[in-house]
Image 1 (cartoon, one colour):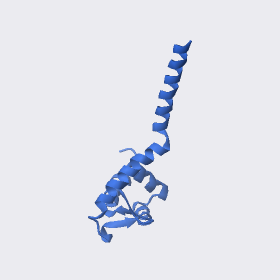
Image 2 (tube, helix red, strand yellow):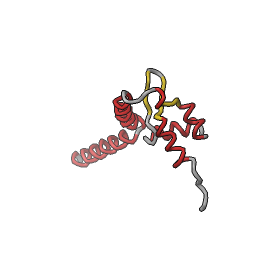
Image 3 (tube, rainbow, N blue to C red):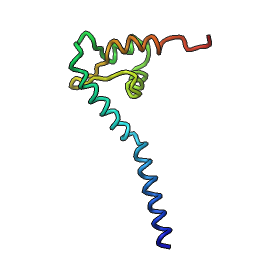
Image 4 (tube, rainbow, N blue to C red):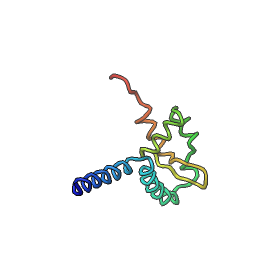
Length: 106
């Protein structure tokens, strides 16, 4: 009986670890890593090479939610300047070509 209880306990612990990896908090860890990489790159960008989230969604003609989704997926790099979020203008212009293009049948 004791061995069976230990096996059940080990199984439950393993399941808990897997669930914790899939929680939104674990994505934040990846986001933090991306943010740290972006902060390292931030030094190389001037204000003219960056744009706000508002400018980006107006440029791409999409919603703010879509911009945030692209940021979470890592398709757009976010740079945080104090409380302000900036995006790399060249990435947004490139996204205009691959995201806003024709999506229907050819």
